[in-house]
Image 1 (cartoon, rainbow, N blue to C red):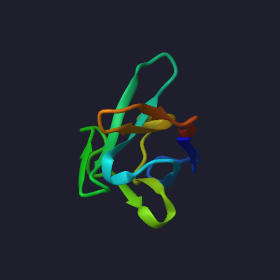
Image 2 (tube, rainbow, N blue to C red; image 1 turned 180 degrees about the horizontal axis):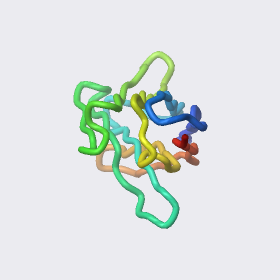
Image 3 (tube, helix red, strand yellow; image 1 turned 60 degrees about the vertical axis):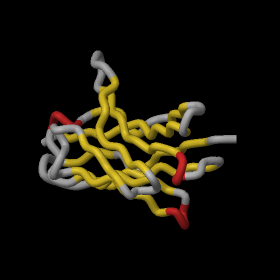
Image 4 (tube, rainbow, N blue to C red; image 1 turned 180 degrees about the vertical axis):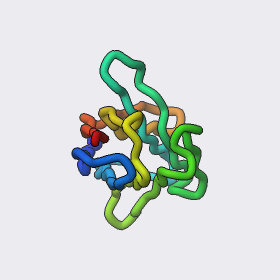
Length: 117
């Protein structure tokens, strides 16, 4: 059974960093696209970053490119999102997403990131 569990969110000041984690079970990273999405209150759930082919390829939303890094630790079955130079606009609930190739899509429960002075 597939399960995604996010952690690592919290309250930080602008310019600080956080690393989010998503522990995945029941998935094969080599055949699963892993992504981070975020959703602020009253707004749509937006794409943040994705990792394909077990981390061989990555894509980022323009708003986070150069500040965020998505990565995978195969040994720990964990997806990460390193978030540097956080801005107030980054405040949102961050969700881990897994899309199996020509199969089902899964979501984690989300972890809250708050960026405030």
